[in-house]
Length: 466
Ligand code: UDX
Ligand code: ADP
Image 1 (cartoon, protein in one colour):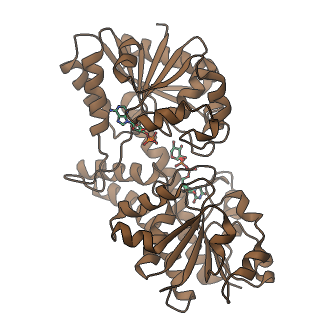
Image 2: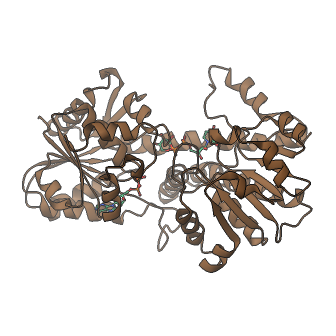
Image 3: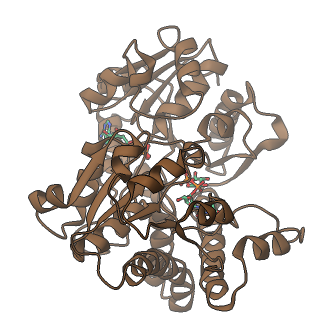
């Protein structure tokens, strides 16, 4: 089975970069990325590559090479579906905000809409690839919709979870640890798996392409993220213990990470993990376990989320208690809003929750982030529904450079580990701030001695206070 045309539904953080790399590496395959969101598609087509809707190092170069050659972005969803041999579903699957499973289960309405649309439009056999993170056994639901509402054509469903991390998406796509493809255990299923494997085979070594049954593939995606998130929550739990005992969490991380059985990655204590995947995937795992009556399993994984919420709250509380138990009317400057560096994505970012808690105490928050727009910051806060939009606007002030943001502040809190924060003129920042000038480093990126020498009262995560 030779793939000539690919369609990807959803031009977001997953679909956009993934399809750009697939198109770059397979110039003979036409790749159409489609989305309902007209503005998003217009941004993908902008001649000015700094206007791409997603900030991702190296993405502009890949798009520049493939766009208009064999990579196309459009809103013509039906047309792209009809002409494609292989269709990727890369739409969002947010946590449900209503009904059964509210706050836990994945909302599959966008996925179901896609399946129905594919069924309605397809006039010949298609391979449908789940790219969005989905709960286990979603492929079964997609297959049922396709088979029962389609035009009598054959569909093969594959699960091909994305393991790219934002901020390093292009590198992760170009040299993945593994590509996972799950499919039906039948001759047709195997042919579909091979067809997708050959698309990746254009640049990924064969021994890194792993094939499994559908359910293993779906479950592996959830559990890979659950394991990673668990590591972050584990080190964050230790960070509190370090602060209480005088140990240094970075020293502990180094000492345990050198044990080859533990390994050095994902041991960075922080103000808490964020992003579109970790929380959502663990909640999914918890929900599935509960639905299956596996309460101990559900409780075990839920603790990872509880620890993360605690870490965010603990950071906010530390700011309040250190600032003499009141932040009312005080300007507190956030450096960073994104959930990690090198992305403009702020979904589930710790910054949102820390800001919300401080605003409850009537603090005035000033924010500078190199890539997140001020509109997005306000939307993030409004989404929490804690207070009215006008109150949020009143209490939050956004800046497009750091010195105005920190001028007159009582405290600076570092929420994202952007490299440029390390090289700011911290003497200048100190001069402009109220005294005593406090810095809370939620990412442990600053040299504490240097900061204390300048005059700051400085506190890191899991670090001795003097
Ligand atoms: C994650 C997975 O890594 C990726 O494989 C999957 O496809 C999607 O989810 P992503 O959410 O983009 O990727 O970022 P990741 O690098 O995993 O970081 C997630 C969060 O954990 C960030 O907020 C990050 O700051 C935090 N983190 C990570 C820590 O606090 N400490 C660490 O040591 C590592
Ligand atoms: P992710 O991080 O999973 O890529 P995003 O929210 O960045 O999530 O991207 C998902 C995209 O899918 C959005 O741009 C949204 O407009 C698009 N989308 C959702 N449902 C549909 C649909 N039925 N048809 C086309 N595009 C859709």
